[in-house]
Length: 310
Ligand code: ADP
Ligand code: MG
Image (cartoon, rainbow, N blue to C red; front, side):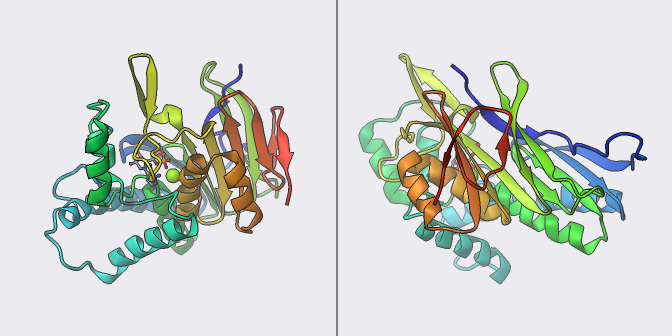
């Protein structure tokens, strides 16, 4: 059975043939608990990479759920009564995305993730009463949108620095910026984790965000049962929706990230209906039975899949 997992950067499939290859500014960073790769062409790419590295640090300082001095951790401990306007705006957007998804994306599952030991990889199965109590605590956790939001903020930096184009792999969230000189689309690969080979890809044009949420990304096994980190906000247990992973393609990074998590929780049927009622994203669904289903605008290639249309 094929399992398609994790979006990663297929490299900025570069100018072919005899075209002269322009040198990119390149940087690998460890941030938000994952490796991130920045590749930036034209303009002052080095300055852009430097500023994006700074941005990632700043976002972690503000929004880490696990680093005790962070703004978010202080907010969760009741130590802050208000936030600066631009920081409050991030929480407001998260609330709006939660409302849009009927609560499937829920930025207040912090205590529940902690109860399962997903913070610090202290994995354990909590008792039902503990899960209930953790749900009621409504502790902020922006883990499902932070990398997407970082992509949006990085695009602001790139736009301000006269950069031609860029591909940022923010730990599985791929953010593209600008157009390739030959006008061809960006190819963002989807790989099969069992072989670590490239098995499928999506094509996007211009500035876009390609985000995958997968149950394999953080999980553990106890007594033969696999528990993963994407939680159903209604139960506080790992979402058991028949999906292995969901990839979302969207112009807005924070939206892409929230939706990849939300659609995973919803499961294929509800998610397809949600897509029909929206006009700002496309999605690819990787089912636990090995099937792959893509919305009609997803521009998926390289694997067998079914298409859902409006
Ligand atoms: P990843 O962080 O692996 O890229 P996601 O974007 O799907 O994957 O985010 C999952 C993280 O979001 C979890 O580790 C947890 O911190 C938090 N989370 C889990 N379930 C939900 C949910 N239903 N809504 C919002 N956040 C969630
Ligand atoms: Mg997400």
